[in-house]
Image (cartoon, rainbow over all chains, first blue to last red):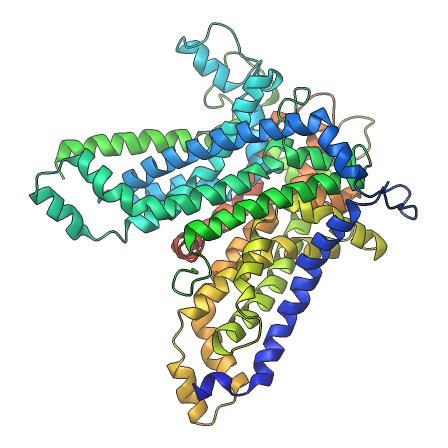
Amino acid sequence: MKFRLSDRQVGVLFMLPLILAVGIFLVWPIAEAVRLSFVRYNPLRPDDQPFVGLDNYVFVLEDPLFWESFWQAIVWTGWSTVLQAVIGVGLALLLHQPLKGMNAFRGLLLFPYIVPTVVIALNWRWLFNSEIGIVNHLLLSVGVIDDKIAWLSTPSMAMASAIMLNVWKYTPFVVIVVLARLQTIPTELYDAARVDGAGVLRRFRDITLPQLAEVLAVVIVFRTIWTFNKFEEIYLLTRGGPGTSTYNLALYAFDQSIANLRMGVGAAAGVIMLVLLLAGSMLYIRVSGFGREDKAA
Amino acid sequence: MKPWVAAILYAVLGAITFVVCFPLLWAISTSLKPKDEIFRWPPTIWPENITFDAYRELLFGGSVASAPGAGVPPSAYFLTWFGNSIIVSIGSTVISITVATLAAYSLTRFRFWGQRAVPYIAILGYMVPSVIFVFPMFLTMVSLELTDTLFSLILGYVCITLPFCLWLMWAFFRGVPIEIEEAAMVDGATRLQVFRQIVLPVALPGIIAASIFSLIVSWNDYLFGRVFMNSMENLPLTVGVMHFFDGTHVDWALMMASSVLMTLPMAILFGFMQRHLVAGFGAGAVKG
């Protein structure tokens, strides 16, 4: 391994930008967020930043809106993740079938993932418009509902709309990952099972599902962490409303920092999110065997 | 597969594809309707009278229907915002890709103290949501007097694009065999020559994949633009179009036309990247 150890200067030189960038774009903002969470900081008076100890954390933990946001975030995350996983696996199985023209279907079904959130939010507001929206029209005309539903101005319906948006946008993520894994399952397993007389359902339960288990666990952890912290999907669709019925922690932190000019309180909420996220990441590392050389990718 | 099974599968796939594509088809249909037809109940599925007014207003400076007395309508800024989004997306992508490519090469070809920490750092950066980065970065920009500049937005986007660019490039370089490089160096080539003439061409597919992901993430971001920028002429597209909601009535044709135009560059990139997309996801998934 003489080669690997030669001309180290080039190697070090190539690493310098990354070390610098990690410092500026990762370590610094997180350290700054932690510092902010211990001071009172009104952005209109940036020179006055008294240290307030744990006051911001106490404020956050005693704020009913924080807890409301927390529980709503769990509802939002739970439904989104379960629906994405179930629909995602179903779609992946469908797209895995050896049919002509499958690439076109794959392309179209993965498309939502790259559509800007702003665009989806605008489209959703239009589709789910209570007066002249097409969704109400279609539901009325097939007789599912008798009256127009005020989708974005009733709390439970607003949450449902937001979850639908999230599922629409991010199910492709699950599809792509599961599809990639399906393609690596050896077909001999299925042939052997068929010889043994196993039907479609048995083959799914005894071969496909166990083979997918690992990648599914990883996807679910990833999606849970990301969904829990999502900001734009909810903010752009409902602004957290009606009232505060679709707030999650990201909206809470944003609101404290921007609308209430309490950067310190917002930062404290952010640090709490970060702690939850680190716990989630530990789970990810456990589940995926991440960091072991052969598994790291 | 039996023909009737295939027929059922096609029918199911067709139906699902239609449902998935419906929001965008509906946006296209709405964007082509004249104003009176938009507010008709029940709605027409396809416009009876097709008009390109909304596109004309966005692309040719709001001359079609500028609101009286309201000064410059937000739609007049559309092309400026479009340009801003292109600049910041490319800017942050160039930075992230350059840093990530150099580091990923170095990480896979040399041994360093602390090397094992790198994937953990990448995954951490990868999972931390923008809402945690955005305010500390904003306050830093304030003290550097950089707020409301496109440069500040480029730096902000590096926060969210660098971790997964590093991740993708690192996974990619581990898969590139080093034997050719060794042979070239035995023949007297220097490390830099090897990097330029052998490594970069081989790495090009990985660089393209990571770049496309990075462009998409920067193009689609809303939060950084919302917090960092003030002036109408400096907004990225995502923040700008939300100003169309500011008036007393909502011009849905304008909204949907801007949705379509905003999605178009990503749709074109997507056409190119489908192949790379799967490769990228296989190498460890992307930001979502």
